[in-house]
Amino acid sequence: MSDEQRPDDKRAEIIRLAREYFDSRPPAPFVPGETYIPPSGKVMDADDCGHLIDASLDMWLTAGRFADRFEEEAAARFGLRHAKLTVSGSAANLLAFACLTSWKLGERRIKPGDEVITVAAGFPTTVSPIVQYGCVPVFVDVDLATHNVDVDLLEAAITDRTRAVMIAHSLGNPFDVARVQAICKQHKLWLVEDCCDAFGALAEGRQVGTFGDVATLSFYPAHHITMGEGGAVLMDSPLLAKIAESFRDWGRDCYCKPGCDNTCNKRFGWRLGDLPKGYDHKYTYSHVGYNLKVSDMQAAVGVSQLQKLDRFIARRRENFDRLTERLRARGLDRLFHLPEPTPGTQPSWFGYLLTVRDGTGIDRNRLVQRLEERKVGTRMLFAGNLTRQPAFRDVNYRVHGDLTRTDKIMTDSFWVGVWPGIDDQRLDYMAATLDAVAQEMRGDEAA
Ligand SMILES: Cc1ncc(COP(=O)(O)O)c(C=O)c1O
Figure (cartoon, rainbow, N blue to C red):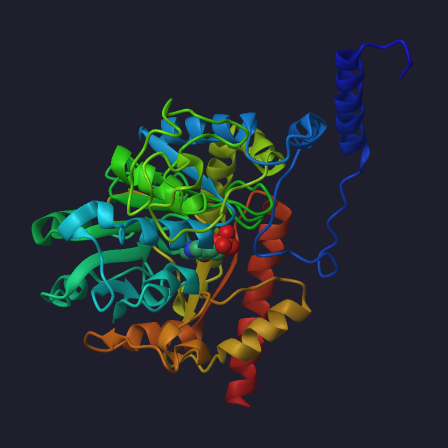
């Protein structure tokens, strides 16, 4: 690089070198039994690295041109009018729920003490916002094969206090969202779809995330695409979008983008709340909000990852099918419940959930320890049964019926990876190791 180069040429050269550096790192070979097989992970390429460097050379740092582009492209992918980037999937869930508490929604707003139907077999931050806003989570049991909400129970759990349903599509397998949407419409309930683990999953040929009033995504490295930390809230309603932006951006009424002033053309012409007429709109707050905005470096990586999403999803589906074939071929479906897509859906698998069948004598905890020792990474279905977590000891919640199948998942389920970094060699090793460990444990039990 010479001193005479123009800034634009220097920039192009830096990006080219960054891409070259990325591609120069040799991939580590897979050694069965020695190379750890993580249950989830990110797949990055030179484009992602180039985008990250490009955004950092802007030195804009806060949300900027890449954030705008990501929001536009993500919304278009869903055929929705709005996508709002946030710092994480958990922040997206918080923001989605916060929106529904806004005074701008009048009588339909969710208030403290209202009930929200959800499940306990899942990730905590699908439920945390319900508690954080003083509402009462109402837990219903799940179905073992699809590890998703039992919709008959959901319907039966509705009372005159119920205001919303907030549930995740579990490990990329959609719940029966069309039926849940119909129930919500009938009872005038808000529907929040947590799609953090299910980007690209389809139900009745339609993308999950388009059924609810609001939906959320996560871009943590374990997820379908990543920007390190990141998430998004999706919605079609311009009113909900405006409310979401307000809660996300400090609670302000002003909707100027970072670095802009007077977008409304009457910055000193408003009279809102009990403020004096003309009080600066930039510092007028319509909600008790947060700052959940992303940096443009995160968004830039998101933009390039989004281009590869379809390929990633296809690979996850192939891995799911190939692992099922291998497990069935070894007769492991007699020892474990294998996961099944919810009828009428095309999952976008996040992980592969196995549940030890009753009477097999296999202890899940010992099984996963042995798998980990042999380098097959495993995970629980997150919190297992949220109501049994220390965090829920003092929480005001209600259980409709019982959580027998949720408890079964808590004690007998675990999942392994199907993410795009897993290839046939790894799948062969995973199936053979699971077979070997399960047979050993049955032998221990018989002895
Ligand atoms: C269903 C679900 N919702 C929300 C989250 C939270 O996402 P994040 O880690 O980006 O906060 C996760 C995390 O994996 C999740 O599995």
